[in-house]
Image (cartoon, rainbow, N blue to C red):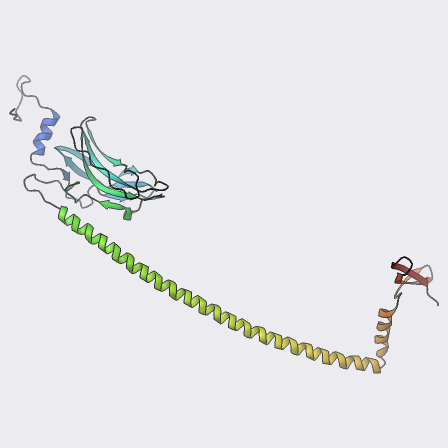
Length: 298
């Protein structure tokens, strides 16, 4: 069948459908995103948990276009409790719904997940903007989890003339390979640095603990020496004072104290004008301690 166009209609003899115009544009505008700006439709980590932002930009698929003139937010499901997945952000040309949109294609759960396959058939055609690795337990999307696929011609690529297509797949693969190698190298360097710092810190802590123990032992020895000296000094002084009290008039005070300690009824109380002494003594009949008292002889 030969098709042609576009000509002015006379009495409705030249009528064209949307797919006719799309087919026309597709002859000189290839699938992909616009080259400028550099962040055209780039997928960025959002500020709220499991959200991503699609930057403004334009894209063409099979002669149909999509324009996003402001940041567009998409939400992802939180990570599974035990398995990982890779979600893919796509531009979808939907022939059945007659629209183009940016969607999240949720990946299948797996210990070693792969990104969902792009749909490219009579019902829809998709371009992949980015893959997002959602590991188990993930609650927040960071930029490190997002792999930009816009430069991969097999998945997306830049809008181009179909005849003079700019193949960025090799550049993308080289960049991705360099990034993977760089990440592994830097991770190994970080682990070595972390081990060195941890070892040095543990050694420093051990040295500080040993210094503290030595200081404490020295201080305890000094304290015990000082305490023993004070005790010895007090004992010497007390023995001297005791001897003096026994040989002087003040010895009466000491004797009274000793008499008080040895007395069976050392305490006194008054009833009227009578003075009574009282105390405690062992009762051999009752086999217990008994309260005793007697009137003091005046």
